[in-house]
Amino acid sequence: MTEISWKSEWLPLAQRYADRTAVVDRYGAITFANLLDRAAGVAAALTERGIGRGDVVASVVENSRHAVAASYGISLCGAAEAPVNPALSAGDIAYCLNLSGARLVLATAGTVDRLAEVGAPALLVEDIGTTALAALPAVPVPRSGWGRILFTSGTTGKPKGIVHSQGGRWVANMLMRATLPVAAEPGRRVLLMTPYSHGSSLLTQAFLDGGAAVRLVDGVREDEVVPTILAGEVDQIFAPPTVLARLVSFLEGRSVPGIRAIFCGTAPLLPEVYRRARAIFGPVVRLTYGKTEMFNPITVLTPEETDRWYDSPEAGTSICVGWPASGVEVVIEPDGETEGEAEVAAGPGAGEIGHVLLRSPHMLAATLTEAGVEEQPPDGFHRTGDLGFVDREGRLHLVGRESDMIKTGGYRVTPEEVESALRPGLDTGEIVVVGLPSSYWGEVITAVAAGAPDDWRETLKPRIDAMTGYKRPRLFVDVPEIARNAMGKIVRRRIIETILESFVLVDGRYPQLVGRDNAASGS
Image (cartoon, rainbow, N blue to C red; front, side, top):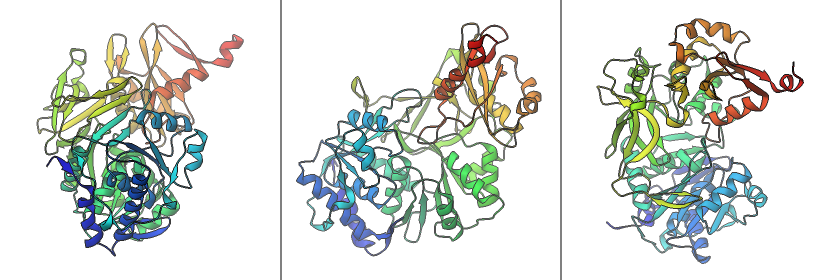
């Protein structure tokens, strides 16, 4: 099969599940037939404006039926979609739109003002009429053609546009459906709170393809998600670690036995968050490893396997993300500089730590940067930027990011290793470790806390004293909150900038941080 017809994929859904609920959002419920006719209307409107195969259409749409209609409509007309997170700053939205080369932008009444800020005219999805999907001309697209452009989170620099082919999208959806712990079928309902422009859209397609329904909420809203969960209106939840931590804080002390699966990934799931979630929902967390460059699933831990891992003594020493999914190749590229760091794994059977490389049929096709388009070699591996190892059972473990590695006094230390040693010592608050630039040390390991008790430094002293000398934090800073991007991922670069805006590093063997006001006055 050299071409894909998205109409052929979705018309059976409109016919088979016509009157069943497809999406529930703030507007209420919408059926499969109505939703897909709305998508067909979007496709017809785009076609009328000369959009077709080979074109790119961006969307800046909040979590709602409009996001689904826009996404499906762009595909039905043969174009590639470039969904942009509405939570981004106006400058970042403009950057992503320019990078994608989009010919047109879809928006809603709730997001169009953001586009006006950057001078981008838009077509409002809710103003587009419906068209019968059955009557819409099919537009077959080549499997190798551009299908979707996703934008990286920009934690280490400007976002990159990651291009996925039409065929890669199709394969990724098949793998997603094949690895769901509970089959997507009529009667199943999943709660999605993270931006549709990323993981929520993948789960939406997988669930709708099986006749299940999705509940789209625009953010983790306690007044909406808690009643939804407690009323049994959903039986599955997509909750990356930051979202899961918030749900746990909302539901602490309650028992919610009706949730069949919680889909988790995108960032490390801390043991304490897992234990608290398990006390509420039971052992239902399914862990995966996903990247913007390679759709979920890359590796998978079933709920039973996740529970076994977090019940083991090694759970706090690395991030186990499971076994490769079908068609996924995981290679650990040795790096001489990481020799001696295998103690990070702290467990028997740990393989050598190195750079995580991936290859699969559903990986990226190209990367967009300001320098242009960089095609992915057909048989090449993707260098993830993650450091990890494969254990004796064949599971992939992550121990940190290459870009986050702290080089101090001739040694290399992962922030995650230091954090895993310190976090269990705090009952409240967050702690993150960064490296501050130093001419003496290279970088100074610095512990940064938000919402921690006043005596957190003294509380953590026994744990710090028990650490290998060169891994111990030398500086300690309180901040109002931990900097995160729109996807909830920690942005260490921004944390470092925040510290250096308020403090001056007095360098040397025993470094100190002095408030800029005091430094300026000479006191």
